[in-house]
Amino acid sequence: MPTTADYTEKIPNNVGLHEDRRLQRALESWQPNFLHWWVSMGPTLPTQDVYLRTAVNVGREGWAHFGHVPMRDYRWGIFLAERDRDRQIGFGQHMGEPAWQQVPGEYRSELRRLIVIQGDTEPASVEQQRNLGATAPSLYDLRNLFQVNVEEGRHLWAMVYLLHAYFGRDGREEAEELLHRNSGSADSPRILGAFNEETPDWLSFFMFTYFTDRDGKYQLGTLKESAFDPLSRTCEFMLKEEAHHMFVGTTGVDRVVERTAQLMVEKDTDDASPYGAIGLDVIQKYLNFHYSVSLDLFGGETSTNVANYYTAGLKGRWMEPRRKDDHKLASDAVMVDALVDDGHGAQSIGQTEVSALTGLNTDLRREYVADCQSGVNRWNKVLADAGLPQRLKLPHVAFNRKVGAFAGIESSPDGELLTAGEWQQRCGAWLPTDVDKTHVRSLMQPVHERGKIAAWIAPPRQGINGNPFDYEYVHLA
Ligand SMILES: [Fe+2]
Ligand SMILES: [Fe+2]
Image (cartoon, rainbow, N blue to C red; front, side, top):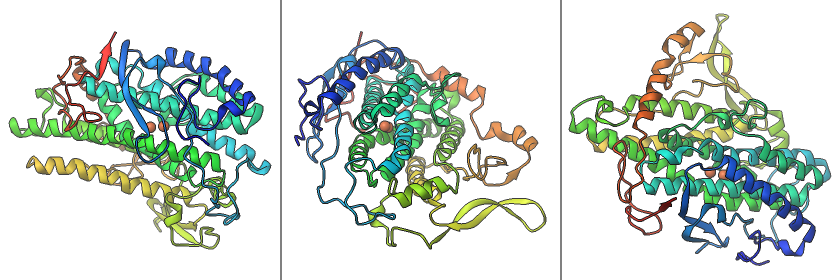
């Protein structure tokens, strides 16, 4: 199998598409629909070309090519990580058997569902971010936005390839539906809640790429373990691209905090917002919002579906090969977050023991939470280095939840149970209010001049691919 894509082909790929004429024709007939979707639902800012990374290979070294390309000519391709012919299933009841190269009939609908749910998030984020170009703080940031957008488009291709190649007619129908659902649409919204929220400003974008793209990283990590080998290989390569999305979020928030801290010190104030920056309290509120809606993406604390997916071998755990247990979990138990009886007839936020299999969503969410904490530590280091005593923090897992054990209650960011009335009164101190959002939006004046940057954010330490910050990353139309 060739690992380097042939870019003279209509659909660049490393899966030997030309050897399967039927599949090639099916994907070629989906391609114009994809392009129509990109033009009508993708980035709205008119550009001539953008300095983009294009995947050309899946190997360790030099897997990507950088260059200025008109976005409509971006070569969305199909790339699977290289096949390991000896790969065995690493968990569940089929552990030790050879990985599947075809979809077993008994798991067909579950696998299709998993692929559709993952696939649905990819174009959703492009839709959510489509208007951000108009308010980009620099050409460097504008380029990063477009890079994330084209790669999410490619991730859609990755999932559509699996649907077309392995799920016959149902798969082709699902591939069409992926273009018909739209983020925030009243009639046919995207499947998951966080992907129907708007991303109206760049602080939201950075928080989204930090918290919500990171959920994607963890979901892909579980699918990478799948017994269905083409899905595993697809996700492995997607994770490689996803790393840049995390980078955009992490360093984006870094730079917002850095600028705010700078002004707080310079003006000797707790509130940098009158000086053209985003106040630390507002940064905290955005963090609270994006973190809590992203926690919802992991589903309920307990789930028999997920237990079944695991036992069947469809979806593993984060870093499954590194886990030191039997990889079957049939007799293990785990503590999960829950509402428990406090002994006086009232409920309180606590934990309860469940079987390890039904608690797998909690297992994944905990890995994610620990990872999120590392970002907060990093931002707090920016504050500490500036000599400031203030700190950011992750809110309690029960805060602002719409899914799972805490969906029916209200909690403060410290995990204090609140009545509906108390929540109404106090939530404006914890989640972005209209006033906060309006202020953030008022700062979002575009800076599209080479080498310049908006006043609410610090410049990056480095440019892209060894280029300086003042490189012409984007040529506007
Ligand atoms: Fe993605
Ligand atoms: Fe992503």
